[in-house]
Image (cartoon, rainbow, N blue to C red; front, side):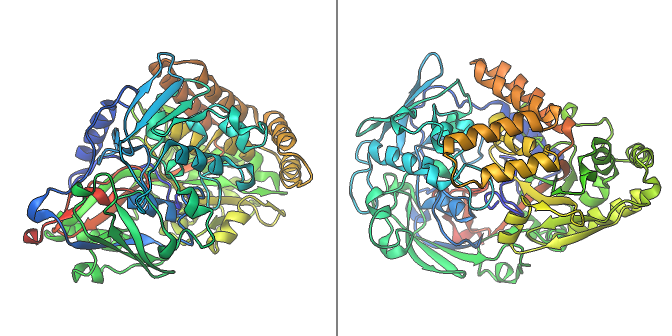
Length: 608
């Protein structure tokens, strides 16, 4: 995703694992599991390791991961997910299936009656990998670094600060954006060495689950502020079940069991070998089928089909259904055609979603941005009763004709910007041409260029959409307030003149952070389309209630308003597929983009 990127790997994923089971069975199990979450009260024990003890201990595995330039979890890259898998550990972790939380560095916590104060108690004797005590002050220092305005605003795209605004920590966003300048006003306090307290601006039932995001992992202050590069093996100081032992840039990484980890006796594997794969590259399954790789993501449709058809290989597949939403977001251009809501509606209904999903057995046509694995999800959020099929196409054709473009005549060629080439891009182009007579072309560029280009103001010869996909925690705050957030939707809803004004303020280095934030809010609230502003205001209403059911209802309404803007067009729900050798035990795939924790795995070579 990158944790949020171009492919973008943030994508919603179902927090259920199944070895090749039928789609409906997985979806039903996911829904049942999700409705039984308990994330909001006191927590006791029930910690972690996947090691079974005895003869199951020891050994190593080799896994594949998307390449990354750094592993600082406070900046969005694929590296933050690798760190979360085993190099650092936060206050809490997700359960292996991702439906709840379990203790991590904190072994218990309490929530105040009004839902505004969370008090976490660190374990006795928990240490860094160098043997020094890990304290609540280390967490507080980490979060002050995370929220430093110099790091930039939070987000979900490559290079942005990884702080998650929906956590709702008092004055955290305000400090990050420069509106509040005194960190003491932020609702984070190390009460003593073993007690960390958070104060929220409003009740947030998703807060504890939100703490499992990589941004909330602790960093060692002395290492980060030391003379050497703290992200290199020779300088690494962590607190997770594994230490960084070796790292060859763009090639491989080796992790070794951390003997100082608080739960080391339940960490089974001695070593994790990581093969780093470039995003968008076509990976071969030959090493996996030769037994050289133990866990691998499977993305090529032909390979997925072949594995499904093989009675042996199919038993080695782990599938997360509907685990990522692929979508199209409008590019800003001096050509205003995409600003016309009827044009966007025509393009939305003219997408051949069934044909696009038909490219792979692991894709389904998407009717909304929100993943169907979120508790309380409903098709009622869709912008239209029929998002695909003959009726949808007929309506789209009529809308185009009414706008003066019968059968696409005179319609400008659209551009689809992407950071990697995907089969879905060609299918989008083909179905728009078939259904609407509209021409479109791909603009596939390097990831860094993609990130910059999708937020530029383009001339009238470059009009269209950028293609992305995201996944993340399957909670309403994350899916509605963090992914495709109010600010993102309101930016997308600005006309060309307002967007140029927005960029001018955003890039004005002479302006104070507080003034910049205030002016940007003024532009977004007054310059965007009314439906986008209504969405933002509805999301804000969730902070006014402590009732979980009422908050969920508000989020549902807000998600429906977001769909009605038709600013972001849902394309497909992608299933995430992993394959694992039979010797690998304890593997479950979760919704969050790290997918699983190394500490939960062990090997049984007799299972080969």
